Length: 286
Image (cartoon, rainbow, N blue to C red):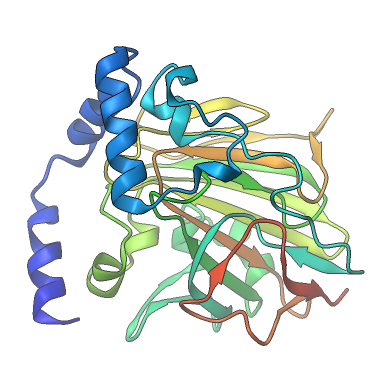
């Protein structure tokens, strides 16, 4: 952690994370045409958003800033890998970390880690299938496409909503806040796949007004004080590789977990690598 990173991060400890996020939610869902168009224009200009990829390119057509932020892409913009046993990238973004879950620990940044048990809500039994498996953490910046898609075909087994803070998830905070991704509010979806259990963890962040999934709708808000979960035993949703599974209303991070000897990342799939939805990031082993 550098001195600059510390200065960026320390004020976040005292900020009212959820109150600020509620305020941002009101602003991003405001349908005042002048306000939302100004907001959209500023984000496009500041972050260099590529609107040529968007299905809808007229900013006047978006009901709100959030409608723009969760915009669809043109069909064919993100080709889905067709390689046998390939794992598809679940999002546009940049790889924060990728590697092995060693003795239950997941690398966050140099010198910092958290446990899979803490990430998945403190339930050791829920985390056990991923011990000594592999993980990746992908960060979505404001310019990225903010819908999340399936890395593999899977049957939903459980969804868990885990309470927490809402620290930023940018590089400075990731390098500074211990156990960041296991401290922030998050939604974990656990799937059964042909290669074994797979967890997709959608991590909230400051100004992330909500997280939603295609089978449930909006999961958060409301914010909560204790873990809540949903079991899917009868008529469990089945989502195919490449299908949309959820979205961030404002940006954040997705973490993917697989079990021991079940998956392997591609050799070029490493920290700081820019990735695109649908491309091959690894392959299954089982």
